[in-house]
Length: 274
Image (cartoon, rainbow, N blue to C red; front, top):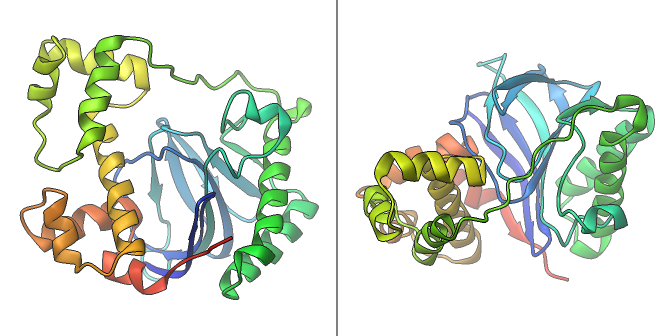
């Protein structure tokens, strides 16, 4: 069974160490995403329909809103991954501030210096630190990964960044964001924005890079994670508040996107304060 070994939430993002042995659903994050293999059998991850190896010689970076899913190679024991979810406040390279959280390529080499930094920072995360002792290490690691992903010797075509310019799609996003709910009818959202269902799906994906369903699932996961970590509300109540008809339905949804049950995630999660 996949489990969380350490989970830290802060206003800058999340730092986690997971033991994973189950595949995920295709999902996305509003944050940037850095994944480091630190133990067990290497696995794969599909990012924008391309498969990449997550092993001790590579680093995988996922830009905001890029669809991806985890594909384990060892379903019995799994592997241990150090995972960062990076929002713009944690993304400090000066060149990056102008374009937001964007890495140059999905999979790039893990140099000896990066490997030492990864293992040192992962050990800190597992040591139940304060934000004060962890923040500098995380920023250094993120900055170093950013620079390596854009290294000239590894030039690749730029990864497109979707910008929502159509007012109808912006309205759809506002309607979903105002009150994300598992029972939202996307056909109703389309009609409210003056679009037919087929036109809505095509236009939304061309503007955001993801389907309306995937976008809504991301919003639901953000609300679920916030409620699980920041409140003591029962898991069933959190699921019902998000529009799930049963706790088992919410648990399946959460496990499909995070890799473990919400109760296991809450047990490991801590909030770091400045």
